[in-house]
Length: 179
Image 1 (cartoon, rainbow, N blue to C red):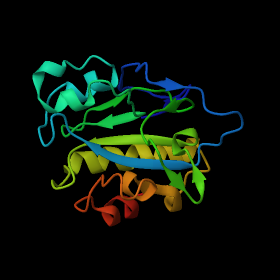
Image 2 (image 1 turned 30 degrees about the vertical axis):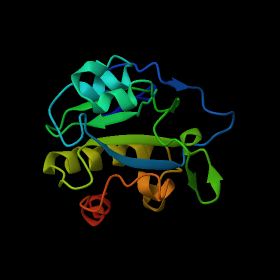
Image 3 (image 1 turned 180 degrees about the horizontal axis):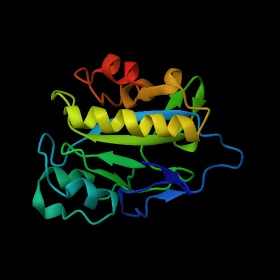
């Protein structure tokens, strides 16, 4: 797996409309780990992809009425099957972190890469997801040298009180020790 022109090679690329330019001179210096399932705690659908593409059919689940107007994306989604999908080139600003702060620097979307794991706060993640996450993280650390183990954070750490993902069952030790 290689990165070329800010896009992972040999993975599916679905261009989300939910991105924009990073601020001038913004260094990519943070990696944010998220979890998502649509509908909540349901897996193996194409609903996450459709959500990031603004194509989610709001009639499919009552929960979708709450999120139907949100414009959200991430750079990468790692599905429970291990499939990796990229939605936004890494040099662009994906809309994944929302109101957030890291080391007294607000607006984490400006300088971060967001990776979503298909899952929820109270489910364990699949072995293949950890394997793919470690591989992608290693490639990102090689390509974007300001990213290191000290600035890989969960969404809950940059948006405390507002977000709880990837949740207490995400095994940080397993992930970070594998890098």
